Amino acid sequence: MTSTTYTSQPLYGGAIKGLIPKGWLDASNLRQIPDHQELYLSPTTLSTLIYEINEYVPDNTSQETLSKHGDLFASASAATSQSQDRETLDKAAILYHILDIHDNDNISKDTIRFTAPITSVGSRPGAGPGRVYTGRVELGSDKDTVICTFVVVRLEEQGSDLVVWGNVPVKEFASRGDQEGLRAEEGVVGGVVEGLVGSNGDDGLVVVEWDLFG
Image 1 (tube, rainbow, N blue to C red):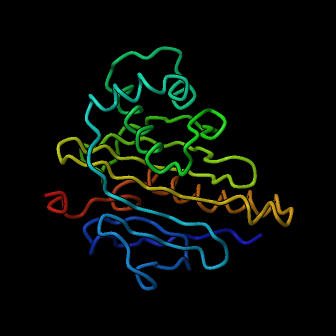
Image 2 (cartoon, helix red, strand yellow):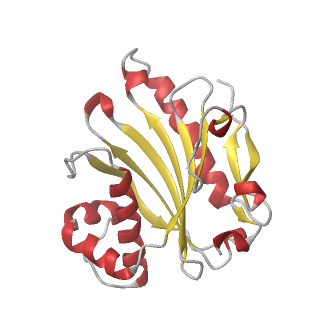
């Protein structure tokens, strides 16, 4: 099987530098995309890669998320307690973002399943003071499941959360019994996340122009 290569991609007019799998399509050439998003499409599957700049989730909202969704938070963070330290509040903020994109009124551990808990990876040079987290979650149920691998950079000073979602819909692979193809596609999307947070210096995820955040 041919290994996937990744290319550096200017985002938001070059204000941020990210990665995309080689050959993926810029959706803005096909349709209008919200200003806060950059959307890339696989040329061969229904998988997508979304970069978006969201408002920074404040601590009081994180605390509300902890209170309302304690069971989900336990699976999201692999934590047995809900202490109010910085990392816990950050993880609750990320859960808030996940709930925001969850296209299902049924919010439970059956429809939101964390297969890799939200994990702090500290910081990286290109993200300045941002606190960086990664994780993997399955959204939906049965054949309608979407596998989502994500990166969240919490930019408190800039009042923003920079979020990257790599989405793989299971249905197109399940319908033809292609488990090998599904695993390969997960690897393609997972490789973006690894490249964004695992590289140093000018590689991976880099904020070039901090004025983007106002």
